[in-house]
Length: 223
Image 1 (cartoon, rainbow, N blue to C red):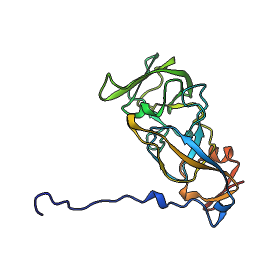
Image 2 (tube, rainbow, N blue to C red; image 1 turned 90 degrees about the horizontal axis):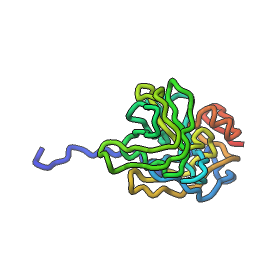
Image 3 (cartoon, rainbow, N blue to C red; image 1 turned 60 degrees about the vertical axis):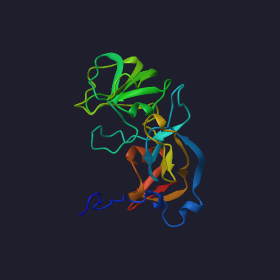
Image 4 (spheres, helix red, strand yellow; image 1 turned 180 degrees about the horizontal axis):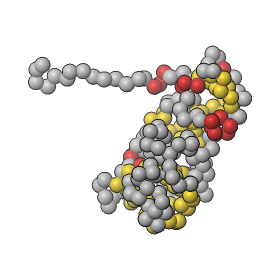
């Protein structure tokens, strides 16, 4: 191999061609058009379960990924989670993964969750420090993050509304990551469709209930 040769290029799966509708059900699906997705959540695939920001300020009314709340482990592919990198210290400072703080804004209402402690309301974000430290960000909230929330317990915080599924993302979009993230606009499938279950992302039993949907074999039926 000569100097500067590249041995191979690995290309990932082309998510843009992903099909979520079974047969021709997409023609009659009830779709909420042009919803605004919050910035900072990276690429969201077609079929992603989507929640609605229920905060009193900040990004209220915008959409973001639904969280499959049954299991709070590091093995869950959950784009909505803002991972905590330091154990809670009964203070209003929440130390999180660098860049993840861009998944929320001042005025958003945060909840804390981990494998060993029930979800708790941390109140509104009053400040987000992304400049003091090069390796972590610090989110300041109005209610203390208890010491029971730990890194060992896979602790994370998320925006209010994370636990209610409002629909299924129709197409793959990129909401961006980091400080330059801009969010995205996409259509949301809400009912009257038959979807391939294998094409859905984070549609758990609770999400099926929220959507009045039924899983039948390889299909998910939205009524």
